[in-house]
Length: 397
Image (cartoon, rainbow, N blue to C red):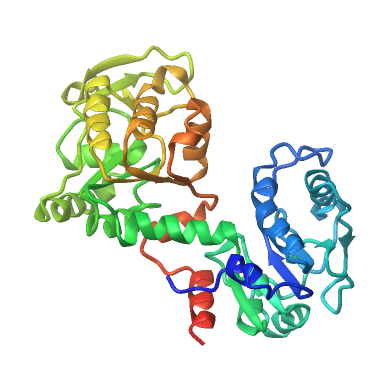
């Protein structure tokens, strides 16, 4: 993908003395008293901010936080806790600037945090006048927020349209590189794991991947619908019978290409959906009417692990069972450990996937962990993200 990269501009000295506007993703969880409970996104933004400061730029950073009402400031919408955490991590003051659209004072070598960008009227609708005002604040716009790359908003798209220079920060550039490596020019076999409660929310992803992957592993409620399509009983398991025909189309598309959708041969069932429910392993063909499938069985897990270890590229989105309950976590753990042990390049994304990676401590064994939920899913669907499109357009003149 042909885009300008901020790392190249900084290395060439083009950021020295320049006003650099960084759109980061600092949308972190907080408790009721406003304390940040998890700061991964803040720490992920540091390389770009440090790169700009080291290059001698006057640095402005902004992000959205939560779901504020445009034009109506409330204390809980403020980036003040983020500014405090950034200051701790950077070891320097990070002033928080409100009402910044009409002008920002920041000298070269210093950084300021601009208050929640979604408080600005017209942000979500990508208002042109707002975008032009933002663009006028800077010499270089740096998009470094992959989690917002699927949204065309004033601080993600419009500003990139009108800024003198628009480029990708190191975090966004890494996402682009990893996605390209996994989907555009993958080492084969390419195996995708797509799991979740509903086929309907990921049907377009499954259809898109069916044209490209060598193995399509389905899990969770999605797998139950595919089991129905294969003529297997699923008892009272979560499924979408209305989408059985769609599942059959995906299976047929894969088969026509000599690829496959592995259907579970054994499963773990329970009669109740709760952590201490009695878990029973049984052949997939013997699920009874009062049972629900909550995980894949050990034989299925072993077969999937074998395919993953032999893969050249792995794309992972979603746990294959109710991994929050230990009795139904063995399938997801087997998949996670197989990915970790594989020589394949792996890219993983989605909130539940990241939670599983953390639970089994395999962060260092996954090739790339995507920071974007919705953006990652839209890439898997084959969509061109607005952020990618505008940065490519600007790079091409």
